[in-house]
Picture 1 (cartoon, rainbow, N blue to C red):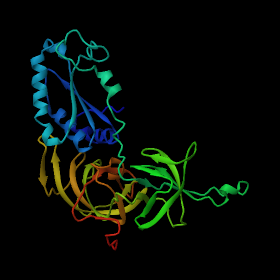
Picture 2 (cartoon, rainbow, N blue to C red):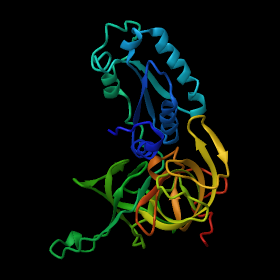
Picture 3 (cartoon, rainbow, N blue to C red):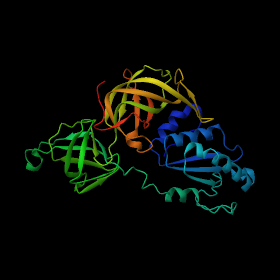
Picture 4 (cartoon, rainbow, N blue to C red):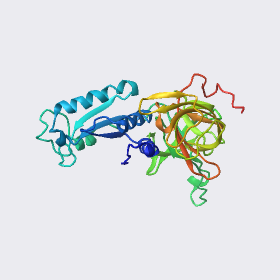
Length: 347
């Protein structure tokens, strides 16, 4: 759980908290209604593709448990939703001070026929949230134990990591990216022993039938739904450093298990979270700004659009001098990007 205040100066906290969340609770004061902070929370939840949203209208005891006031707030917020693309949204009347509709149903809101807050959290369906389409395994470690006392491990060579999308079975055909070499899964090893199948988000070690040059930062993918492979990328970004970001900045991109130098080639837009409108071609992004940029990386990235796979579509930017994380980003689909095998990686 992450407590993320809605004030503008805490935008980076909100982005960090929402980046791995399955559900976001937006707390609304029944007296004030949907404020700028409410819109900021909604905008970031939409930008970070949080799958489930719960709008908790709090302090109903201070408006005499008014159903009309609750409906007014709900209708106002529902007016934003089509522009944000949020779909699974639940509205809940509560009084946190007295516990109404938090754990037990409240006698003060007989007009509310939905669940309590806790029951909704316990029953919201998140099992299908991880992407099960298109196998993705960013290689974290080449596992070579070299144990002469155990003949089975003397020549063992496995590729270890956490599955970021899809599932894999023994005998599946895979591609090692960005090199584009095809191979087959000989065996799969989980922390508890050999398995015939593994799926996102399990950690696994993959044995290949071919002795290929694979290392940390490479990605094993299924042949059926290949990802994008590119050195140029368009991304939505939250800038987290007091020093402004300008076009031409040189930084490090941490994407999955790959770390590579990159240059910001253009600042395309800056998003105003109070109006959900974008300003074109800003000169800079300042602390807590959200905007759209273009990157060019020294090594090709293997990725999906963030909206399709949050694990393979997200990245961070690192200052190469201070080693501080200065931004969190979400990669976007673009017409000029190519699938593996169709791109020239010359920089």
